[in-house]
Image 1 (cartoon, rainbow, N blue to C red):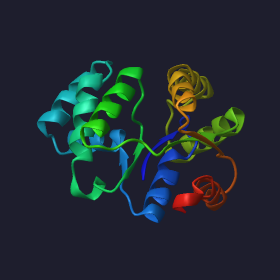
Image 2: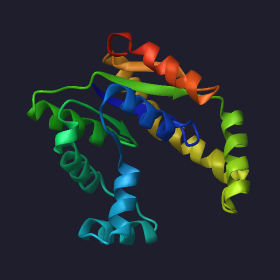
Image 3: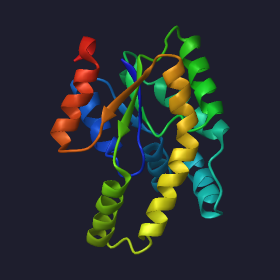
Image 4: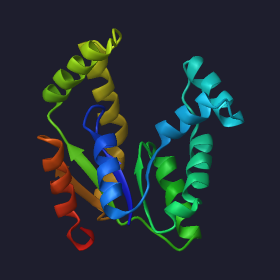
Length: 189
């Protein structure tokens, strides 16, 4: 299966991506994890990305598309993958479609975790407190939620129009959400 998972910050995308990928026997691929690993290892990509982020900029679609295409070429992704954090722009959607098309593939589904914003804000505030994240105030968290809605809504609409969007209730215990996701993909569960 070739999947994408969408959901606002704090929705549990990373947790669900790992669980779903394990059940399906495919890699969970997070662009954020790839960037962080490259920054930590001081690779040429990591140095470039670190400079961009430290200057307050966004990593360009071109760089992001490059790293995703490289990662999708690894052997473990030959039979499928679950992308978390990509695509985030219409240009990235087009780039991903082109990448897959070049190899005779297409997406099977785009999972969207639907969550209650107030519950997510409370979850993130609690996490900020326990992890000592003093910058994660309620205003900052709500702003991130608003940015996510603004940037991701067009992607979700696009995938809904092409018949790939699968909305899943992302509230509740981790196991319950995983079971809902797997039930939403019955032919592959």
